[in-house]
Length: 144
Image (cartoon, rainbow, N blue to C red; front, top):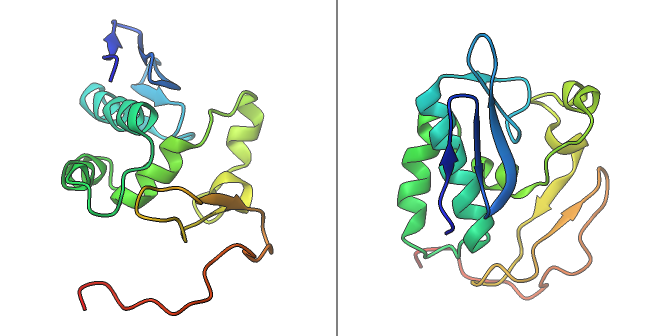
């Protein structure tokens, strides 16, 4: 990780294109459009974005998930939801940000999660698209 630069009005990291910007009432985070956070929450959001941007989506057995769980909880999110949101590029047009709703983040696209243990093979599906690349061989349930 390249570190996070924090000023009175802006937060950024060389590991992610996401930024946090101070507004008159709090902080706006590029990967959480429509939410206003306090300074501590904004720092937490930047830590998540920097971690995901610097290391990619972690493997399922990576111990970083314990930290991501705690950080995401500070933002009232689950770790998988935070990782998906932070791994998306920022929306350039502010009007497009307003079109996103909690029911349809990322315009309804969803992350296909059939990736291998290293995260390779994960990709985004547009609304209504079915994954054609997923394994068809049944896998044992986790923990069995």
